[in-house]
Every structure is written in C-alpha cells, then in structure tokens.
Length: 162
Image 1 (cartoon, rainbow, N blue to C red):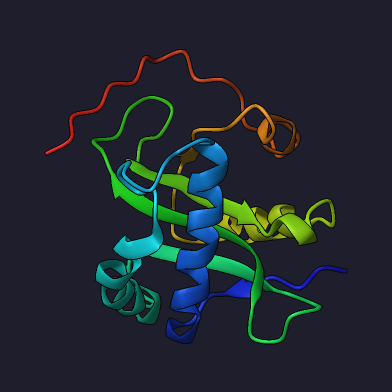
Image 2 (image 1 turned 120 degrees about the vertical axis):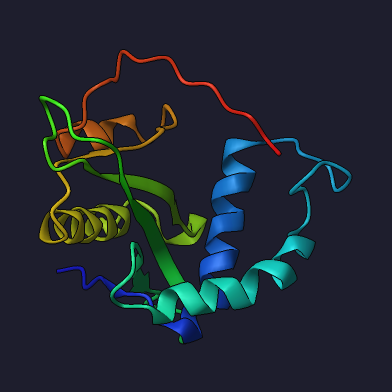
C-alpha cells in the first residue's frame, strides 16, 4: 500500500525539485539559457511555496509520497489549486480544482505513487466543495488520468504571459 500525505513547509525544496523533474520532462532539450532551463528560479519560489504549504485552510495543496530509498527525499508529487468561477449547469457552486505539477522521480516510477498523490488531491477537492477538476496531461500521463475518470475537454485554451 502506498502512503501519500499532505506536503509540509519543510518539504518545499523537494517539491520544487520534483516540479523541475516535471518541467524537464515536459520540455525536453531545454537549454540553460531557456526560461526555466536551470533551477535558479527555485530561490525566488521557495519562501512563497513554504507559506502556501503552511496555509492548511487556503485554496492550494500539495500531496506527496516520501521516497522509500532516500530518507528526506520525496518520490512523487501532485499539486492543486481551487478557483472560483461563476457557477454553471455542470458546476452550480462554481468551485473548480486544477491539478498541476504531478511528478515522480525517474527511479521511483511505476509503483503507484502518482496515482496515490492525485487520488488524495481529488479527495481534497471534493471535501472543499469543488464540482469538477481539470488538468493538462502529457501523452504518457493520459492513461492515469483516464483511469481516474478524466475525459478530454472540448474547449480551446489560450494563455497570456505578463
């Protein structure tokens, strides 16, 4: 049985390390000169992340599995945030969960760690009153999310970076 738990402020460095694992997998071939190409950004992200992890009543949560072979390290991570949108027919209460930064150390894959983290995150969303959850999936991760009930979203997505 896999034991996942909510991340604590002391886990922040490892959470950032696993986020980097995820970013490197999503953007293979990124060079150090590319934005996010090196973990230098971790220094600016560490304290805000610690504060968010300490806020157990907020709209942000991370769930982790401790690495069984490396004491003090994390093996897997799933992060999520709750947002409010005006309710609609499929979600009258308007609370949406968003799953992001799901990652597992390469040496700890295929053991159910990501599944355990995501399942705990989805339970947290339900407990907070979310009517639905969304995510962006890599091709490798689609089978996991499909097995958890996620279906493709027909709405196009766009982004503006400030």
